[in-house]
Image (tube, rainbow, N blue to C red):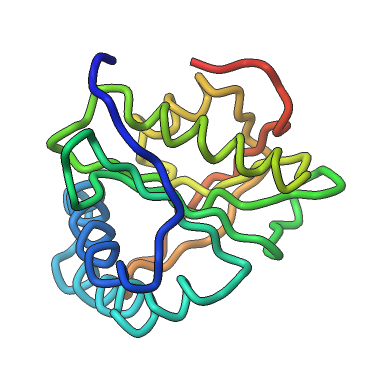
Length: 181
């Protein structure tokens, strides 16, 4: 990757731009394979402006925004969530990587790896020992990405998109594992 970038924590005043990015990247990632009504119902609930503000204000959520050099709006983000653990996850101090999304205009430029490195570094800084996530079983590109980062499948759980009942695979990796892409 040759592009320069900045990663920094999101601020509450950025709720609108984070929300717009979250909706756009989620829609771009999951529209294929989803019914439009289910997608819209999920987006309106999961990414409402009130919910985004609430999540930004909650100290158990850590949002990191990625800005390509010279840009004022984020092109990617990650969300770490403290205090939620799936039963299949092992580790003394797990932290969830709830979201990692990059705008499709900058896909395949290495920004997903940049965000993953930032998420791992933040998890280590906060003294967590296990990073875990859920990923849709049909999101093959994301599954391959996580496997390259040393994540191993440890379980599954249901995920509901509107009225569509889906399955998320649960993956985890040690925070301090040296393996990276």
